[in-house]
Length: 224
Image 1 (spheres, helix red, strand yellow):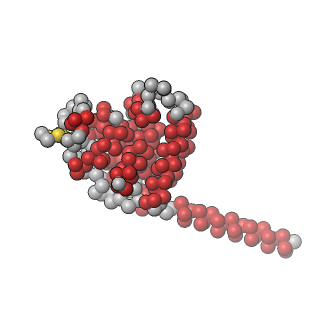
Image 2: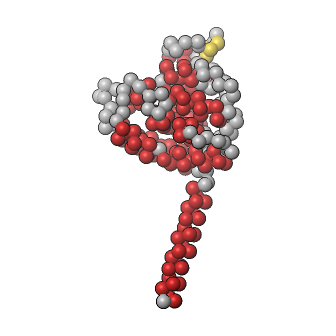
């Protein structure tokens, strides 16, 4: 009887130790390399899911924009699969918000936070008032009718951010984001503004699709 008790006690202690180690690991923010690998893996999962219903006349990037804008719908089963694939990003964002003492409880904004900010980013200075605005030599474009020639004249300081946001959201949504007139450009304000635009048709699924595209694009720009 005593031996049985010792065996059960050992199993219990090992289980507790394992849980503790798991919690410690989950509380850590990823390295920059691991973050990029995570984004890439999630993006590949999205592509596999969306390719099942992508119209033949659209590229995958065009299909994503159509989904985000609400021009094409997405089944509840596919939305569920997208959210399941997004869980690592949500966990990363949860840890990142804790590390930086950010109170972001809304799922849409949490997903946006994860894709907008990598582990090495300064959350207070990564973006500025020009980051999501199309500008020409004569100033900011006031309508959503900007074309490729105008895009090529975008302020070089924020060119990479703008181009990545354009690829992730599409021209119409990006124009809305650039004109959101956020009072501040803090992480909380940026994530709220980005998610408000991206979630209009599909909720958190739309935010996830957009921000993964954006995050991967920014990572490529930083590594070039």
